[in-house]
Length: 91
Image (cartoon, rainbow, N blue to C red; front, side, top):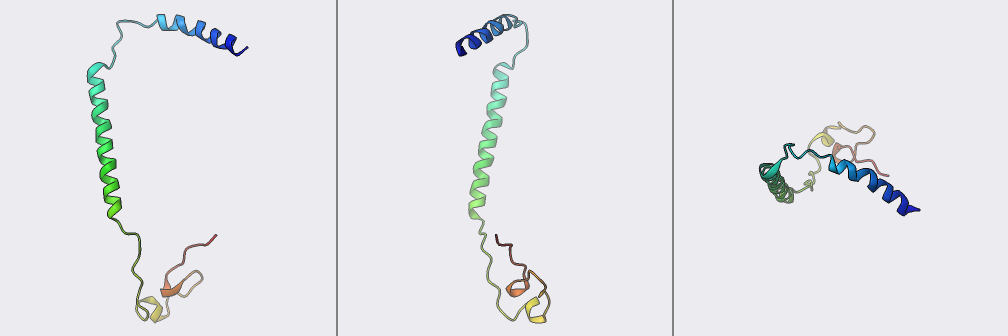
């Protein structure tokens, strides 16, 4: 039975393919060149972004005790971790 639906779809699509106007404008070589240039530009930007992201360090330097908001008593509300900074949610 699946072969019958496939053949039915083909019988409907073949006349549509013959109705394509030969005088329509197509992108041609210039369209391909522009598309290829855009693809190369995106590839170059992605490579550059990966290189720059590799240079970034995401580790914070630990704060020395006795300095900042912790010494003055500020930042001791709920959610404030050591050093007066909010700790990330767990779970």
